[in-house]
Amino acid sequence: MIIANDATVKGGAYYPVTVKKQLRAQEIAMQNRLPCIYLVDSGGAYLPRQADVFPDRDHFGRTFYNQAIMSSKNIAQIAVVMGSCTAGGAYVPAMADENIIVRKQGTIFLAGPPLVKAATGEEVSAEDLGGADLHCRKSGVSDHWALDDHHALHLTRKVVRNLNYQKKLDVTIEPSEEPLFPADELYGIVGANLKRSFDVREVCESGTVSFMTSCESLCMCIYLQS
Image (cartoon, rainbow, N blue to C red; front, side, top):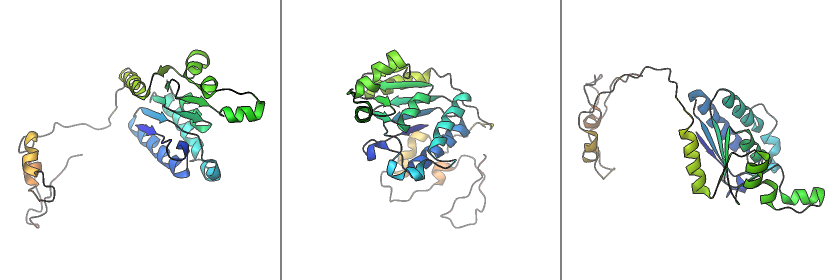
């Protein structure tokens, strides 16, 4: 399951609908035991709407609870820090099982340099405050640092390959039957003009048992085994 922030829209901040989408994605991941990959580039909660983001049981805080629960169930939580992650955006990589950060681009901190200066008078760069070198060498928040986005995704693939992930299915998969015509002939059946109709029986039929055969010829009814 891939969950990504879009920093080009309000700095990747979490609106109420953003929280809903992430919670739904995490729910699907838990039900199907799917590793979660978070492509993080977020300023945290959208503060003008924070009253609608934080208070309820199924609001923003629930996303971090879900991360912890999935991690405890050996459902891998992997974060890829590809931009500035502030406040709530910083919790995601901090709670991940493995964390990849892009050097001189990704940052993780609760508050950025402007707030540090306002609170303490200290001037510090974003890289020194929460960059890749700090978190990989000193804080230990990040496990891998990447040269750029492409390198980060390459490292992510390596992490996923090493998960020893085995999907557990609660169903018995029966061997499937081959279609009436070879799959490589589908383009010949369907054709390039998608506005033109074709006989779906040539695609589906493979010893299937049809029913309602007296029904309108434009309709094909078959049994499916689930």
